Image (cartoon, rainbow, N blue to C red; front, side, top):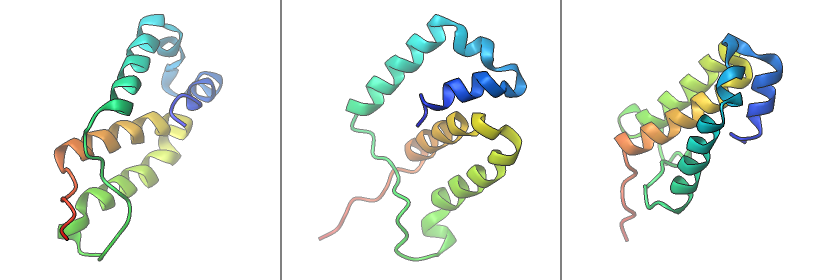
Length: 100
């Protein structure tokens, strides 16, 4: 979804971002980052809610709020923004280990 949003960002060109995606080094960096994230053991947050307490679910609520707020402003550029926010929130607040 992230990579598929690049042509749409270039086509609609919000905030003049097209020149970043035309730079081959930016694309190499993104490819390297995505390859690393696919094989890394970084625990990513899940969007499954067990309860609706803000204390337990603040990363999920923040990600949902950032997504809803960024779509009208950034349009297709919201996809990379939300992807980065998801990774950052996962690193800041790793999910709790399952207890059995």
